[in-house]
Amino acid sequence: MMKTQSRFPNVIGELLWEERIISKESFTKAMDILAKNGQNKSLGDILVQELGYDRHKIYRAISRIYAFREIDLSRITISDGWAKFIQKFYRSLELRYRKEFVNKKLVPFGYSEKNKNLLLFLTPDPTDRKNEEVLRQAGFKKFELAYAKLEAITELINRTIPKENEFLEVVKEASEVKTIEEEETEENSGLDEDELNASINQSVLINLFEGCLIEAVRKGASDIHIIPKEGNITEIHFRINGRLTIWHIQEGTKPEALLAVAKDRTKNVDRFEWEKAQDGFIQREIDNYLIRFSWFLSYRSYLLLLPENMKALLFVCWMTVKL
Image 1 (tube, rainbow, N blue to C red):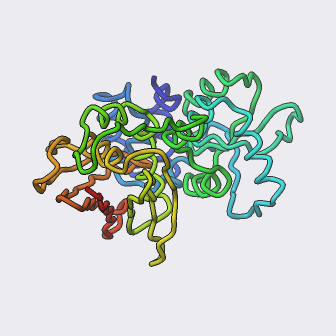
Image 2: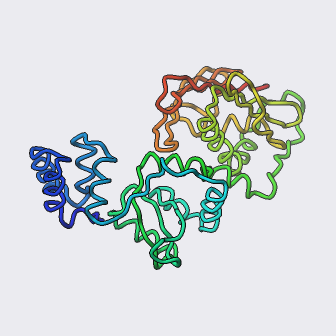
Image 3: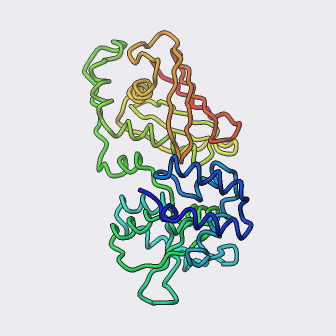
């Protein structure tokens, strides 16, 4: 869908040029790019992403041209009452709409001064027609949009809205984790591959593994230790700021089953090879960062390495398997 700015890009560009926000050369380049790719990007996108202009400076000016008012969040103290208002609003939304609001960075600010029946929403781009579409689909027929700096809105969302972990939601919603019953076999009879397959098919284990990776990255953990205990108990520990603490205890599941899940979701690894060392990798997108997990599997240990978001740090996951 074309953005509102795309309706009159030449007019908006000329106004930005006349106000000396952009140069004549940049205006000409932006018009050329729009002519070739006008359906996918707005004038603001091109000026910021391709020509290197400051986002706040450009979108603040464009919002003013379109007569959207600006809310300067740096001048406002976020009170406990306002934070609770935002949290209550997001909790009232269906999950699908909540994700749309967060993705579009639409944040309720309060009720409009123009009309007490109108909710005022902050957005880093009030000219984007997708905002109105999202609001109307969520049931808001009347509303007002106002511009706020992208970084300020992002900080506000991070402070007031806990990030969703859809994998852990599945684990949480499961009323009871099915216990994997052990076959009555002789001691030291080895692993039963059919039993492992049955365990892997349980969505709880898969979602637990994926959710564990997401939570560790978000909490800034340097290590994950997945440690098997006697009695079909597996402990998952996070090391944060040098201190190792329990994050989750999985009961009623063979520790080998969780390792098999990890192997099954890793490229270049044979899940049914239990004696030879193997190398593999997993690639995931977590909070808009593409993260590559590289790991090494030996007979008794599981080692996972990844850069923590954009920082030059190593994230280590180690699993000891009692065979």
